[in-house]
Image (cartoon, rainbow, N blue to C red; front, side, top):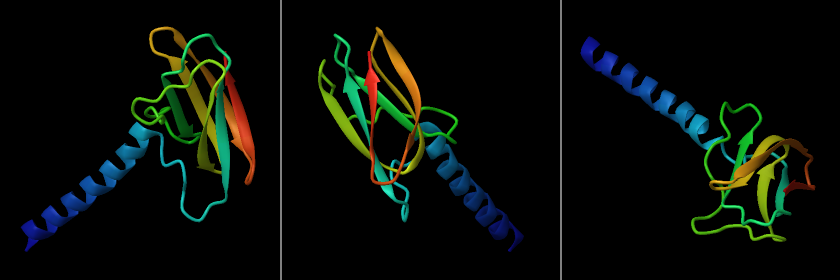
Length: 118
């Protein structure tokens, strides 16, 4: 019985750690259930396409993974919008091999906040 109990506790701990690790890797969910929503619009004012946009809740320890759909980039002069829960967000966008821009923004409920990347 003790072996089964220890196994169950170990499995529960592993599941809890993997859930936390997932947010550390991804930057957390863009939409948290039950919270009001807003939008982050990433505007490309540079001369190169933006290949990656990383968004994370300000409390996450990393910027997370690229949030653009596979095969998508933001062309110069173009924009891409993300629906997110209202609150504090860290935004990083860039061109692979050329550099990136970082910004911390507050997204009020019902608003669209623009992040311009040069």
